[in-house]
Amino acid sequence: MNARRLSPPQLADALSAARAATLAATVDLDDRAWVPAYDPGLQPTAWDLAHIGWFAEFWLLRGPHRIGPDGNARADRPPRWFGPDEQLDSARIAHRARWQMPLLPRAELLARLQDQLAACRQALAAGPDDDRLYHAHFALFHELMHTEALAWTRAIQALPAPPGLVMPSVGALPELWIDGGEHRLGGGGDGEFAFDNELPGRTVRLEPFAIDAVPVVNARFAAFVDAGGYERDELWPGAAGAWRERRAARLPQRWRRTGTGFEQRWFDRWQPLVPDAPVVHMSAFEAEAFCRWAGRRLPSAAEWEVAAPRLSWGDTVWEWTADPFAPYAGFRPGPYTTYSAPWFHHQRELRGGCFATHRLMHDHRYRNFFLPGRTDVFAGFRTVAAD
Image (cartoon, rainbow, N blue to C red):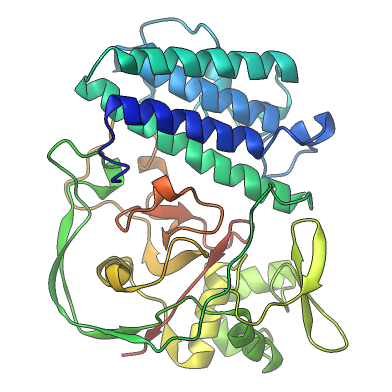
């Protein structure tokens, strides 16, 4: 199933499935975990759920939309279940203010989420409409992004993993040779949903390259650690070295040494490092230091996208690329104007997906992006042979 070409009935069912996944990641938490102590990497769970409901209601049920004087979208219809907009639009409320505003009690929040979902399903039942289909796809993917974020929120707080969430191991496979030439990237068209940062697409010419068939695994990264990789200044130039010293990083964030090797914190428990599981909670700086040590490099985003049909990806870890997150030539913001544009040039691009990413999100054109020093997301990397 192409998740970017869902029909109205398929979208209604997908929205219900996304909501079930969201609730599964939250309903077992106690009230204290719903509003944790402030952390720049977290959202209050109660705010996050209200924001999810607000986003779907805003775009699916409250049109027509227009752009306000601040460049953000406005809806001509008032909220019914989730509002006011200035408290639940993430582009309009400061991060710390999300802890300071009144939040809905759990029972009322869950009831409103149920009613909002039912109303969105009813709107989709009215039949095909290009704007409605676009916004329904966006609401679906937006919720699934937040569902994954709720999982890493649990990991930050050392709470138990959501039910059924496991990190798969990967087999040892030889690198793959990818032919060079001209390749078309990104895009959309013919009624297919696309994120604005994928448009209008671009054509690139690549030289042939060799790329790892699977992401770098723990055993391979442990060799870098044991070789003193975190202590060698030449592997950490510029911003990478500043990041390392600021954090006093001498191991990956959730590793610790034992008498026989390493343990890794997996959500709420420490466990022996699994040698053939992908290394995770990596910053882009750590990924690049490893590459310098190994005589390799990170793939460009274009190389990753071209190689993707032949790679194993999507169910393991997000993968850092060498590229800053930047617009394609001819970029124009979509209706949700703040989805991409505010983050260009200072964030780093990732590709693929991870063990916590819903399969409906998997698309080799999808461009994820985070600051290169982030280690809380489920990110790893694969390498390319150095030129």
